[in-house]
Length: 230
Length: 230
DNA sequence: TACATTTGATATGTAGAACATATATATTTA
DNA sequence: TAAATATATATGTTCTACATATCAAATGTA
Image (cartoon, rainbow over all chains, first blue to last red; front, side, top):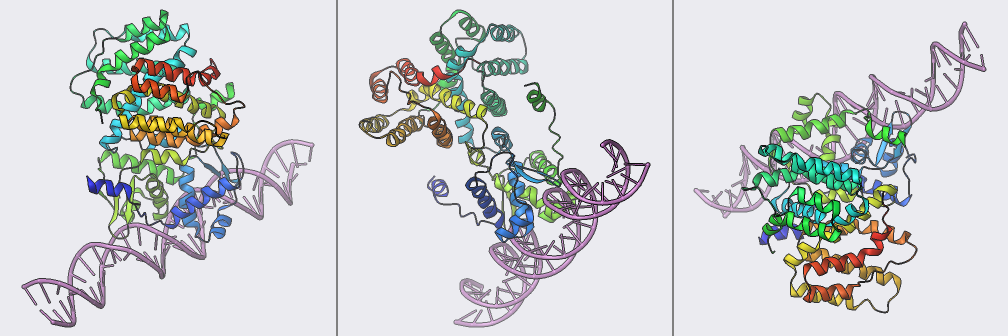
């Protein structure tokens, strides 16, 4: 354990390559000059000369920014600053097979936190149409095999995120799905709370937000019970 | 609006460069071969030849994976698969000046959702020491200028995240701070709820989780009131 | 034999030149 | 004037060469 802590606390000494340095310098440059999306950037050769590196190294750094969507390039027009898709970059590294166990657990908890906190947004923005759709999803649950049950579970909770009216949140949830898939697969027994999906729909129809919050908590309780104290 | 929807629905036709393709191919390769952190990868020339591209193009793709922390390289040892820091990659593109207004709003709401949903974790894991520290932060609030008030506000809510015992969540919050800083700066009048920090501390000391949830909601109510219905 | 030193081989890091390709702009042609 | 063509230019790609760090083997020394 002590070793693990050391490696976390002590600087990684990431023997910075030129590309690493140039990447940082470019970031600083873009920020300092307060470039805005659409603004044109100097051409590669000018940047390379200014930085005192080969075009090759510069292009490695630019390649990174391009991947993140921070810049876009066209053959003759040159480069322009762009709006990165903040979630798109996230998605690239979200592989449950690579993420360590602790982080996996953290993310699982993050999902619980999100769903517990979603009630306010849902109650501000829910529509009758939403509730009907949600009910239709809940109705399909009876008498199906396990793989269908999981799909339906995802559809139901996905719809809840959708009802929050927050696209970023919704995309975030979709992105985290593979991780829960993984965690759920690891779980031995399926977790079923005292409040099921149909109950939640009923609360949404006629109940108060407080009732919905309690209902959601009861629904997720088996997961919450599993969380360790420290 | 119709145009915006089109650009979202229709494929972006991102005239893929070789580096883009190689990046994807490498990802697939790593996944298919189910490499694990620490495993050695083939050397650059072998990969380049197998892919039928120049070493240069390959290096642009590798440079991206290296930035994300997916691979690490050493002079003679070659490359090994590594564990990417999932939040580190996120941080790179989180600049309030570049993010568009809608996403900024989405993220602001995300923060509210997180804090509303944090109660369960906090009640599972809070310690007396935590509460004393939180109280000390709350005590310092009186009679200070605005810049101190904001710092203290951040410290208080930051401590709440810390009490969740979830490192990923805590880091996530720190990462989102610049964005709230930006949103708060835009706000004309400071928003003060009916329940203040000291009240929340008192609830944590002797109250139930339900009371804490209600208290948190009252505390954040001014922000929630501001949210648009759609 | 055991250990320290030197040497060489090797994989990544960096540089530079050359050519390919697409495209905005200028020029020519109908 | 408008369409077709040519040219200049910035990015995309390849190739070669060399620098640098480091592992491993060979050599030297006690």
